Amino acid sequence: MKLFLDTANLDEIREANRWGVLRGVTTNPSLVVKEHAQFLTLEKEICSIVDGPVSIETAANDLDTLVAQGREIAAIADNAVVKIACTPDGLGATKKLTSEGIKVNMTLVFSAAQAILAAEAGAYIVSPFLGRLDDIATDSLQVLGEICEIYDAQGYETEVLAASIRHPMHVVHAARLGADIATMPFKVFQSLVKHPLTDRGFEKFMSDWREAKPNLGELPSSMQEA
Image (cartoon, rainbow, N blue to C red; front, side, top):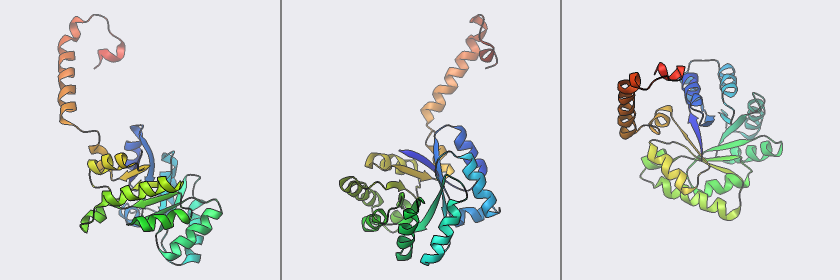
């Protein structure tokens, strides 16, 4: 399963990219506004940092405007993906854009029925929102599992992206259910690597190393400084 970052913050993206495991980024208007930056400048910079897909969301709900915005977004960079909400006009715009070879991430999906429509429209990615389903006492993992099962049974090529990730277990469960991608805030991304036994073990190893180092003879120069 590919790991994406759900942010428009350049520092967070650069740090996650430094780990060598970041495969893409998802943005939306709310995330972009938080950065107080010029839209095109910011999105171009994100696309230049990340090798994988960068989802950039449209800001309209009529077919013609969505198509026009989608074309302009796709022109930002080769790895730009147009993000469109799952509405009737959004489906029509997705069908039109994909026929032109433009990749679309169909977002704000909350049911397996909507996910079927997204796949039939030719979406490159479908984004079911886990956390927001949990917020209304709906089993988000059941919905995600249904989508993954249907896509597998029908042979849809649309990739399933688990969105609205709130905690590490959302990521783990999404992977178990067969999601292709999980996108998450930087805080959740950081929490994936944290474990108290890792921290405790690493500190013990380093303490033992510092104590024993004078008796180990000649060392590689990089290990002498550790």
